[in-house]
Image (cartoon, rainbow, N blue to C red):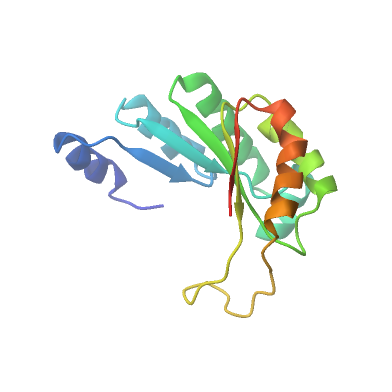
Amino acid sequence: MQQDLLPFIQKIKQLGFSVKLDTNGFLPKKFKELLETGLIDYVAIDVKYELSKINTLLLSKQRTTPFLESLDLIRTSGVPYELRTTLVKGYHTPEILEEMLPLIEGAPRYVLQNFFTTSTMVDPDFDGQPFTQKELEDFASIVRPHVGECIVRY
């Protein structure tokens, strides 16, 4: 969504730094263009929810196809990547994580990160809560057999 992203990445690379791109995967055409430049060293893609409910969360009927296109792009690009999910109590359950497995299956790295509130949240009235460390580890045990590595961020 950042209009000057490519020139910014080019400047970072000219300074000798590696570039990690964090994305929600909803702009596959732009994502493909960035991958094809060869300037991206690592990618992290958010996997928010199980596929049939992403539309509900995003209030859109057009969002799953671009997301799936981006997943296909990163899987075939040769660029190192991780998938990640921010787990929110009241929204994510072990059953939902199991329904997400087809999206994350085979990822070299999958990161489960705990939700926490901040003063800069888009919706200050959001009612999500964090999980305990044990609950996060229970989620990780569901995922570990399906990915190369599962990291839990508390």
